[in-house]
Structures are given as structure tokens and as C-alpha cells.
Image 1 (cartoon, one colour):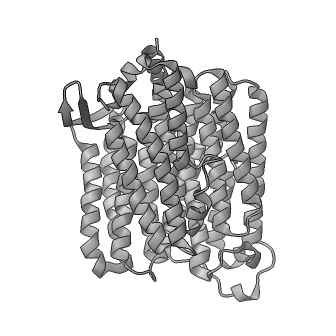
Image 2: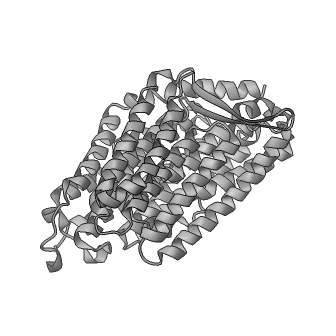
Image 3: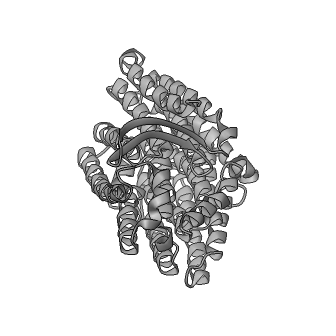
Length: 497
């Protein structure tokens, strides 16, 4: 048995420990070291790309008390999670390089990059976990460093914002602990997710409904699905921009992945009923419209992007709610697309903060003349989020909508019409964002504005290029998602008879 996944995670944690003492001497250039560590983990991860069809599994026995408790350290890479793990590594790699310049005037950068790398490892570990206890460990390993990163290096009333984020997430975790404990009772203390799949049919229907509610709410807090979104606008807006990139681009999507991996298979008859799917799609539509309408009236660039993340999560949740191979395929691809495009746009917001110290769009305008590279990349990001053809999100949204059409949701034509209408709302607030920031008259105080250095330009450019390449040739990514969707659902149906 190869141990590539374990080595990748351990490498990130060992690298984080090494960063702390070395970072005292490298200061902001510690970002290069963090990027190198994440880059090596990415190469290790890519080395198993051809092995995920099996799937690729690593299992290490942890705790074994027969008939009482069985906890394994189990890692898996397959068509369900491989691209999500890759998205985490790509986005955190680029954000580390971006941090070199963005964080250059900040304090305690040894601690910042230590926590940054630990945060990255926690997200990757959560996505690869196949044991519920192990998943909870990495779930919390995401929370603690991100809480500190917001509270120490954030903006405005950062400590209150970080505390609010912490409390919201912990309340969601409590719901998850309760649901996992119930599953443990039915599985005789075996918390291996694959093993729990096989006994799920023994769980009474009323308990399945309870489990579905607990887990949808618990993971929904991390996903910031309306009405569980209260922490997100402030946390995304007040976090240091490289952390906003990660919060929006990959962290909230870990909750979506957990719904696909854990909740959907374990509660499938409940989830796959027309009543439940219709209810969940309505929740998704509420998030899409609420986030979009709130983004439309924002003056702060980062708040606009934060509310946009709520709206975009609605699209991803819509695909999961429809619960069929095509819609799930679209949701997973949208995780990849959103990670790149929203990460790019938050980086654009960071450029405005770093270069001119202004994020209020009422004080901006005409910057395309002074910052042509930044403006061009912002247009690509905005077009991508709006779902224009030629950029990766067009394909993912098309797959989600196709999956909804093929589902047994009530009034699915009306729901599809509303979903397409939401894309118009997305185009509206993104167009307004570009117009207010980069076009129109240039304020006199911005005459000296200019594009940032290469540490910020290169990561943004590469993220834009990847999004366009995938938009033109989506098979590059879909080949690592699509082949597993039909077998995934076939397995679920076989488990439930």
C-alpha cells in the first residue's frame, strides 16, 4: 500500500512547524517557503491522478475495541473528492505567493504562515478523510487557524468578527457530533464511513430524517446557506485578503463536499424523495437570490464578493439537492470554478487595498487606465462568476441546471427558470462592480495608482488562465469527476436495495 495521501498531509504539517522558526528571518518572503511546501504536496497529490478509479485508499488502524469502538485513520481519493482536494492545493499555493507582497507590512509573519499552512493541511485532511472521528479532527483543524488568522491579521472589528465566526461554526459542529454519535450507535462504534454506508439501511426512517436535518444544518453553517449565513459577510470582508481567498474559494466548499460524501448516501431514501429535494432546492434558490440582491447594493468591494459567495454556494447546493449524477458532477466542477474565479476576484480586491488603500466603490472609478492588468483580470473573474461561455463556470452551471431538469423535483421548470434568472442577477452585480471600480471618471487622488508587482499579478493571471483553459476544454477536469458519478449512485442504490 502506497502512502502518498498520508505523506502529503504530514508534509504540510511538518512544513508548517519548520516555517515558524525560519519565518522569523524570512519575514514576508516566508510566503515562498509556504508555497514551496504546498507545491510539493500538490505534486505528490497529482502523482496518484491515474489511480483514483479504484479508488485510491489508505487505511491505518487507530483504535480497535471489538463491538465497542473502531476508529481508523482512513484516507481516500476518488472521483468524488479528487478535484476538490486539488482545488484546495491550487488556491492555497497561489494565495501563499500572493501573500508575499500583500502581507509585507504586517507583523508576526512567522506565525501567520505557520497558521496558513496548518489551515491548508486541515482542509485537505477533511476532504480526504473516510472516518467520521478523523473527519471531525480535520474539521476543527480548519477552524482554529482560520479563527486566529482573522482575529489577529484581519481588519476592522476583527476580534468580534472572528469570535462570531468561531461560535457559528462550533454550533454547527455540535450538530455534527450529535449526528455522528447516532450513527456510531447503529454501527456498533465503527466510524468508518464505508462501513456505515453498509448499515445505513438499518436506521429507521424517522432517525434518518433527524440525521439529514442535523447534518444539513451542521454542514450548512460552514457553507453559509441562508439562513445559516450570518458569519460569512463580515468574516470574508474583514479577514486578510489571502484568507478571504481561501475562506470563499475552498473552505466553505468543504461543507458541500461533506454533504455529498456523508449525508447524501447515509440518508438517500429521505434525501431523494421529491418533497425533500424540492425543499432543498428552494433553500438553494433563496441563497442564490439573497446573496445576489445583497451583493447588488454593496459599496464595499469585499462585502460584495462575500455576498456573491453566498449566492454561488446556492448554485453548488442546488446541484447537490437535485441528487443525480449530472447535477453532482456540476456541483463538484463548480467548486473548482468558484475556487479559481472567486479567489481571483478577492485578489483583485486585495490589490485595491494594497495599492491605493480604498475598497469603497463610491471612491473608485476609471482605474482601467492606471491598472490595466488588474482590470483585465477582474473582467475575466467577473465574467466567469456570471457564467459566460468560454470560462469554466459556464460548464458547471450548465451541468447543474441539466441535472435539475433530470430530477424528480416538483415544478422543476419553474425552479430552473428562477435559477437562470439568478444568473442574470449575478451578471448585474458583477457588471456594476467592474463599471464602478474600473470605468468612468478617475478621481484625482487615484492619479498615481498602478498595477502591483509580479508576486500578486502572476497568481491572479495563472488562476484566470486555468479557468479559461477549463472553460474551453472542460474534459481536463471532468475526466476526474464524471466517470465516478454513475458508479457512486449505483453503489448508493445497491446499498439501499
